Image 1 (spheres, rainbow, N blue to C red):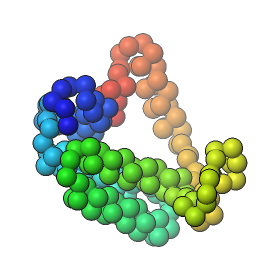
Image 2: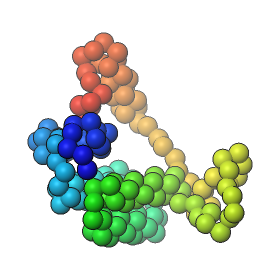
Image 3: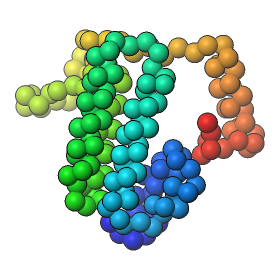
Image 4: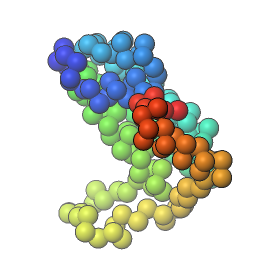
Length: 160
């Protein structure tokens, strides 16, 4: 990893957003593989905890599959020897988690070529469907948050 602030800035900003200013200062100029491994693992743990805290309705298999993806991600991180390998391991785990949250992670590895033109290939609700709902209180909170951002009284960077 290059020793400069710009390299990996998006991930550094995510670390700050998730874990606070001290974490940002910890990774700001860090090239330490062990330090980055710690924060990459912490990101996976935060996702796992957030899912258990926020997914109110799901089958047990969904949580078991999420745990499996996170554990596989931790193994990838443990075997990474450079920060570049570690960031690739984290990115692949986050991609799998994202698709899992949409229903399931597709497996087109047996296909010769998969395009984005056929939406039927990307319908992921064979096992479960995803539904986002908002209570009246959540809608009001979101509106107040958006108004704060528009008036400059709040910042997206430090939003809850």
